[in-house]
Length: 239
Image (cartoon, rainbow, N blue to C red):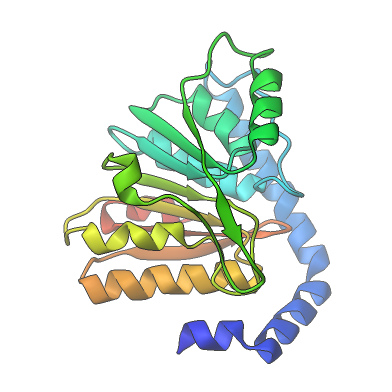
């Protein structure tokens, strides 16, 4: 029911109107999160000189802070990232057990790789180029959990391009195979848009149906990002 309400045109109209009225507040929140991100980056020798261009097409500073915290609070971070971009740069600079990126645009991946190799000696991530199916009603990569064969515990959902409904659906393929004691952190970018907000609600519905306990919270900069995590990582959603 909640997913249907989010996809309704009247809900989308009201939400867009509210966002226009709250722009100034969100601009201040953007400054707050940029300051928090800068503090995190400067606190570590591995990231001290990293330059990130957050916001716009890229994930916002709130999302980057959540990714930072997720990786640093996980004992053995195994990261699956849907969408290649600024968050990939940050993850590359942090200590992970594995990092897989799913991307559909080979030209963008080549450009990103060439640009980032000017800053680093090597790229640790495995970048998987796969087709994406994107319509106005849904979007997803043509890849399944069986194609990846890794027990990931951190999921970054920021691709492919969004849709007005049922956006970026791949994360929903993983949850049916999880057990009740699964430890995980899911970061979903762009939930100020209806398609991604529907996904945020669908993930929580599926976890509840599976009997998997979780915590969730939305964070705003000029955009909005959502996090859903197992109760083990309650501290990530506590601020």
